[in-house]
Length: 307
Image (cartoon, rainbow, N blue to C red):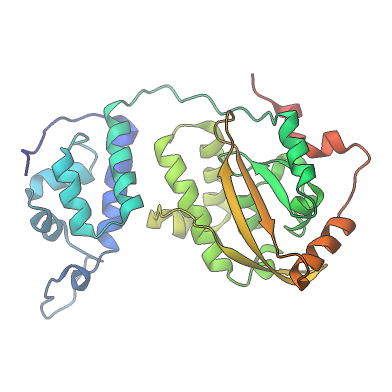
């Protein structure tokens, strides 16, 4: 293994690196890594620092500096050894490297928030997807634009003012969310993992810190999941909705980054034509509110555009 580097610095980025390592260490059991646990009560959840350091082949003092944010430039071989010792999956391993890379180039000035402007042709794209529910969200999951079914699919979201419509906020704070999703626990874990992965690469970005701060304050469920520090991303999924207006529907979802609009993502749900699920989508699209001023409704974020 390459020698341990002893460069300190990195500010809040170094602290995030330490938080990630500690979260993964305390959630990895000795049995998972092949260690024999002796008799008696272990006071430390998961692995002890010295156990992880031994498994990774580094000194305990060096690992303690990593976890405390005092050391922010470990060598690639040290990172790989820690990833193996903690049984990190590919995405967690990549996130570990990203945290170290960001700590190395850390700048105290927060990066500018991505544009919230939704281009006209993307609004046309959303309209052309009907009756399939479709919407565009920001990196912090704010609803920026949608077609009628895209908003109506999240029952009750239209009751909130446009500036408050956010998927993470909806999942944790809207009373309908827990009944809409039969697998609500899985939905919120995925949501927090995505937010955590984004926030750790831009920890000072105002759009992210404001949302996370609000949810930490208002939702104990969010706070508990945030502390776990999971960063496993979402995969294409079939999702079931217990919708109060069109009944139970199961849809296939797809999300994708939008070219030329950093931070914006398109989400769409589809069902096979001729199936009861597709019939429910037709009903949802027809019965969703159809505002006279479609342009204003399709892009509520326009009035809040950032320069």
